[in-house]
Image 1 (tube, helix red, strand yellow):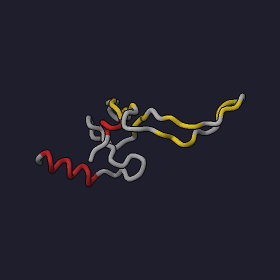
Image 2: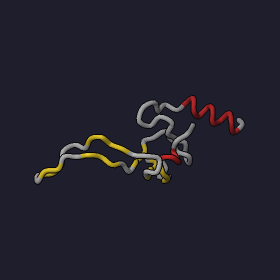
Image 3: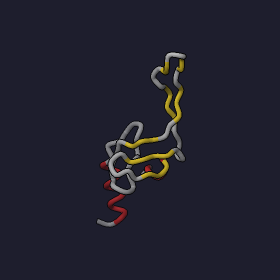
Image 4: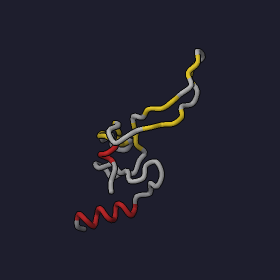
Length: 80
C-alpha cells in the first residue's frame, strides 16, 4: 500500500470522534488511551479536593501513548 493510501485508510478507520478525534500514536498506531498533561479547575477545601472539572489542553501539552509509552506533544499525536 502506498504512503498516501495508508494515511487515507488510517483516517477512515480512526474510531475517535469525540475528545480524541484525529488522535493516533505516530509510533505504534494506537488510537488511545493517551495520557495528556491537562489543566483543570477543582474545588479545594481544608478536607481535600472535589472532582476536577473543565479540563483543558492544547497542541503543546505533553502527551504519552498508554500502549507503547511514546511521548510527544498533543500536536504530534493528531493526524489529518
